[in-house]
Length: 114
Image 1 (cartoon, rainbow, N blue to C red):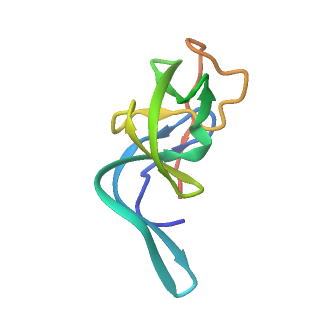
Image 2 (image 1 turned 90 degrees about the vertical axis):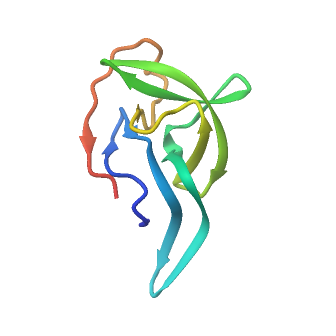
């Protein structure tokens, strides 16, 4: 998927949450804009999990995983728009599994995310 949504990525742990202006799917010679907005914080859907009756993510904070409860607005398969609970530039853990917990130690492996 393209559209300049994320500048870098993590493989358990993390991915920077960044500001994006639109979600774009490119399919062969056609481009479809599913939705767009200003000052949008987006994360990979794979970072989300249910925590009691809310959505949660783990944020990398000085080598530790920290639980954050977030408000989810839109999901487009691979990407989810967050309106509360994360700030631009924070690193979230993708595919956290049952071994990641707050305040468990984690090591970030940041890679390009396309």
